Every structure is written in structure tokens, then in C-alpha cells.
Amino acid sequence: MKRLLVALSLATIPLYGCQDENLEASINEEEVWKTQEIIVRDEKQSTVVERLQQENDIVNFIKKLHLKQWKSATLPNDLNALGTFSFIQEETIKFGQENLPSKKSNICELIYYEDSRYVTLKVIGFKIHFEVPNQVAHDLQAYFIKE
Image 1 (spheres, helix red, strand yellow):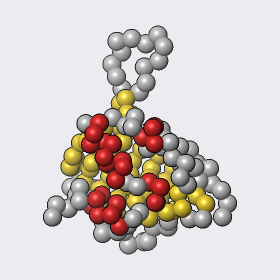
Image 2 (cartoon, helix red, strand yellow):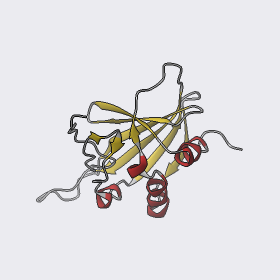
Image 3 (cartoon, helix red, strand yellow):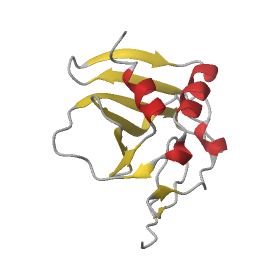
Image 4 (cartoon, one colour):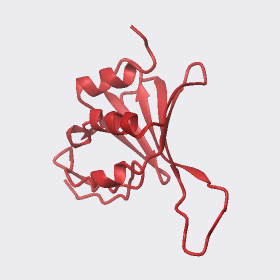
């Protein structure tokens, strides 16, 4: 399969291409921790379900994604978006900038589809679809469907 180079980021991390249907293991995990907030939105109710703002919560969420086990996929036609995870980061203060109000920007979004193992990563104008492990799908769905 052709090597696809797309600059993606979950908080500015590059994910490099697809080879043999697997997401390559070249994820810069140090960059992931730059995410400062994850906003969880329910698509059906158009409400914010949760905000992950504590560093420990964000780190645990990202670890539970098991990014290295994701496989590129084609979405089935009958899927409905259940919710979205928006990854937020404050813009970096550059040399010479002082006391400016901080601006937060949406780095990327992860869309989870109801009762499925599929997600879509939206970043810098690209949408890439993945199949995730069962446990990851269960963990993502738990944000929207309380048992």
C-alpha cells in the first residue's frame, strides 16, 4: 500500500501514514500531553457532557485510546455520530508577547460513532477514519451512555 503522509495531530502530534492497514507506531507521545482540555459533546443533544481539564485526566484519556492499535478503515454507511471529543490547546506565547489574553484553539476532533468500533479524526481540514479496539470503543461510548 502506498505510504500516505498526512500531518495530523492530537494536540500537534504527527501521525505518519498507513502501511499494511495499521497506524504506524511513530506517534510523538510527548506532544499529546500539550492538550490542555478535552471537551466531550453529545451529538444527539448538542450538549457538553464533560470537560477534562486536569492533566491527569487528559493523560489517562489519551493513554486509553491505544493509538498504536488503530487501523485505517472505511466507515460503514449506517453509522450515526454519538459524540465528539474536541482537543483544546492554548496558543504558545511568542518572544516579545507579554500580558496578552490567551487564545485557545481547537487542535482536532475525534468523532465516535454509536455502537461501533469506528472513529473519525478531523484535523487541519482532513478527515481520517479508523477502526479502534473493542475496549477503546467501549471507553469512548461510556462518555455518552451511562450504564
